[in-house]
Image 1 (cartoon, rainbow, N blue to C red):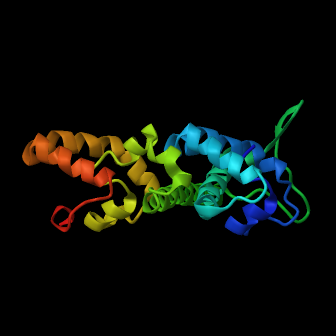
Image 2: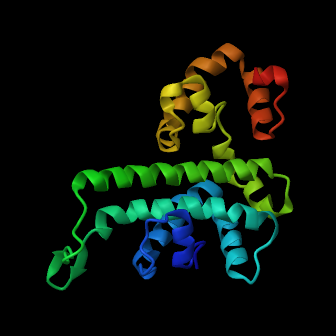
Image 3: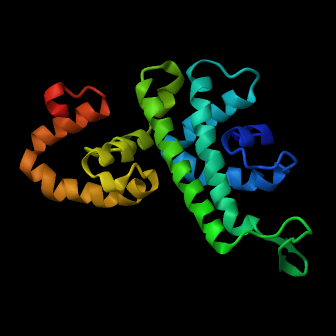
Length: 221
């Protein structure tokens, strides 16, 4: 089971999909996006909980409100994952592309732009999902995420999103994927340069308040 189960949900996020597109052509990539990317952001226990709620009759409450953010992330990431292999087919004779009188494969340049766009929108969707979770972290629906190791990682730095980073470095331009790739370097910079200046005790207090969403006005400034 997944968090996306039909082509209408895909079209709601990415309307370029043809109305007669076979959902099963994307299903393995949806599973890949969920199991190999999304789970690393929200944790296996909370992911399983969301899948169960979505596939049971009538998802409600905050989980229903969170679902579109997760679906947005999953669908864009699945399309990104499918782009490098979804453009060709495989049979017993090997690999091939389909060309008809009205359709032909897109150019490498267009395919590259498509991949970059879907990757960025996918990771931005992940950040938006986390922002929604943090905005409602006290809700009982999100208890599994609130107590997860993944949340400790997601809130483990002084700056924890591309949106925050862009406030201080506009060249980031809100790129969630770029921020994701920089997180290791960001953590290193904090440990090597920032924490020694702040002092371990104050740095720990600041990190605790970031994690609990309880920064004072003075700390924010």
